[in-house]
Length: 311
Ligand code: CP
Ligand code: NVA
Image (cartoon, rainbow, N blue to C red):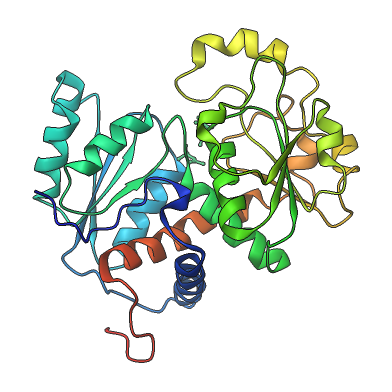
């Protein structure tokens, strides 16, 4: 039976505001150390196992490099060449993997898969993206917003595009951090309200109206991983949902633009916006590294005594 005290990070609201404030402060310090080439090895001999059912560039790289930088090791497994691809139950995989390592990251399809995996794990499990949630990315994005603009409390975040994993994690973040989300999704691609547990959002049928007065404009791919066969229909349905200069001009003059990447210029965002001065997409990507290192440190070591740190 897995120990009761282990803490997983399967959805954004698995951490409280107070925990986020602590981990954000640690992420800033860990980022400072990284930039200063300061060695920080609190996780010597600890191993992270990463299980990928879907493609990745940023998630794999940030977790693998991050674990190495903390003094530990990371092991990459994917469905194709592990026994998961041959039908080994996720419950069994959770049992076995968690007996050989200290922490696990899973990127998979349904949220139910990672929930079942975590229920059988003896060590913390981190959601590296599911169909329903992408909490690590939204955590990095909130950190990025705070770096550029300070507190996100009371701000307005526009979401223009698909009702996908990123949106559901942003909506959970709105509840935790106290901001509002203006949502605009095309007809037929509405939010699944069973995944929404906040009233901190307003729906706009017109995507330009959703950007009005926003502090941050956010979008993502129109076709997420796992939905590829819908791509042609989605391209038609999302016509008009591109975040372009005209939509950005409806937002506040100092509004930021975010996209978790990978992006498709000319589809969900124009090149002039993603490559323009309001875009912070490269900071978002980099901050995956710093935020996840702080998250791993917290899940494995708890709150450390920053006055008397080890190593
Ligand atoms: N944003 C993000 O999670 O990127 P990858 O799919 O490359 O990991
Ligand atoms: N919504 C996208 C995010 C990719 C990082 C997807 O799930 O494919």
